[in-house]
Length: 322
Image (tube, rainbow, N blue to C red; front, side):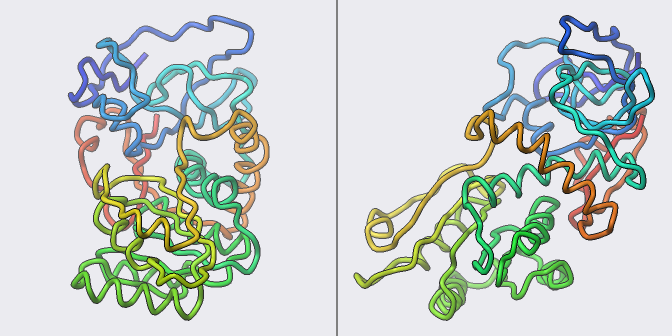
């Protein structure tokens, strides 16, 4: 079969022939892949930078999930037991979702990772309730855009977003954001804006995709003066701006702050099954009815080497079609 194969960590995937995967037990099934999204997660695993990456230096097919056809023609989205950016892959029967009619392959392949990166944080780490306020740090990317839409879907009363590009931030108002704060302004001005928002309407939930300096500034903005403070649930989902921060213990002592992370390893088996059996089917239905939107850029498998390292603009998801 043809596949995108990573022979050495850090190298680009190569479009080449690779042995067909083999079903090894009764819980596995072969799938004919039709589309697979390329996420930062896939790139980090391929480079060996992600904490879930296999330490062994062996040739592997890239891609962790995708959309394809079962032997009987049923179209499903599934997590891959083997790499999914290939003509064929092995999937787990218990980790697949039927794709509804009316939803194209590219959208079905692109949505799940962004949904996992937003819905899991909002529902299971932040425990979002109707009428709460949400701040999304780094909202102009693919997952940030989905987080805005899902926060509104789950009943958020007010949604504040941050990002570096003001023009991109303005477009988020059309997705459900109420206001934006630009990250590129002087630190003192950024902190003053967040403080003003926080004093007018307490921030119940912070979903953070950046970490690094902007997370430090937001946490500084929450610092209390010894009086009672509302509870804020800060959920770290990504670290696009850096993997570490400096956090003053005064912040932790002066504000009612719940700090947690959302990602592989932090989710329970029950939560993962809810993602597969409840959340993704609901999100697919929302997408069919145009109540949840994601933009994609489709590229053929044979061109994987050309596009792997490209930055896809405007918060769109790269999808490889097979």
